[in-house]
Each structure stands twice: as structure tokens, then as C-alpha cells.
Image (cartoon, rainbow, N blue to C red; front, side):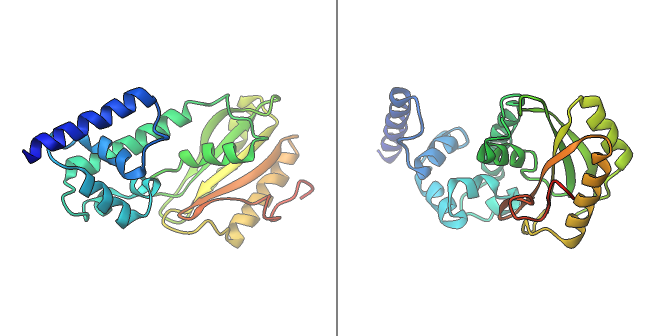
Length: 229
């Protein structure tokens, strides 16, 4: 009888989704429930969804959790953990395909877009976002990749990347794996060095974003870099 009840619950959830054609009317635990339907063909996924939200605080927190962290939640097997990580990677992959549609004058959208390139990244890396004359991100390229907490920028490769793009405006972004987005003195010094170097080539550094565990920071918005530097 209990299994039939769960089966009916799943069908009602699917009917709601079909009719609304949107997740806006669903609570976060219900969205997680439906995701887990595909991992657990039978039984109640409501309890697991609630436990995940209690442990990680939000749907975003669940998706950003590591596989090891997910496995610490009761009844979460490896298949369920992998499914959740796959969903997170899938959504970030789709977002990254929107290249050419991101207008850098939309600060919030730009921050969101840039952040997707560092989701789940365990090593520090630097990316260059080339911006065309229509203020849209035209291309994204790795400028450097380092160890857990350090990275070395190759100025020759950086120059080649920017010149090949044909753009005269770029955004720099790098991550702080497992740490806050607070810029170090080295971050500030290297950014200013890059800005001065590229200025000789008539290339403008619009901003430098730092992606950390607590979100993404704009160095320009914080007053740490200026156009005239």
C-alpha cells in the first residue's frame, strides 16, 4: 500500500510539472524529489530531499556540494550523488553555451556567466573573456592553470589570445579553490601589471573577477583597479 502511495505521489508531481511547464511553483525539496525519481525508481525521495536541504541549506548548496559531501547524507548512494553532480555540470555546461548573448553592461548576468566556468574547479586557473564592440562576450580562453592555490600567467600566451580574438576589451577571471574571494596583494599587483602591459597594445581590461567559495568579486567595483593604472 505504501509503495502505491509513493507511485501516486510521483504521478501527481509529474502532472503538476506538465501543466505548469515551469519549476517556479515547486518548493526546493520538491525539485530535488523529482530529480531523485530517476535515481530511485521506487520509494519515497521526499525524506532524502529534506535531509539534503538541511545539510546544505539550499538547492544551490546541494548542487555545489562535492560527491564526498553528498555521500555523507543518509540514504544517498553513489548513483544519487553522481546524478546530482551530473545535473550541476549539465546546467553549467548549458549556461556556458550562451556565449555571444552575454552583454557585459549587465553586471549581474556577467557575474553569473563567468562563475559557471569555475564550478567544481579544484585547481586555480585564469580565464580571459574577450569582449567585442557590441559589449558581448565573444570568446573564452584559459590563460593559465596552476596548483591548488597558485597560478602563473604567461604574458606571451595572454597576448596571443587577445590579439587573435580581434577584441580590444577583455575581462580577467580566476578562482580561489576552497577559499574566499578576497583578493591577495599578489592578485592586485598582477592585475595592474597585466593592465599596464596590455594598455601598450591598446587593449583595455574591463574588470577582474575572483570566484571564491563565497561568491564572485569584482575588483573594479571594490576600487582595487582603475582604468588609468
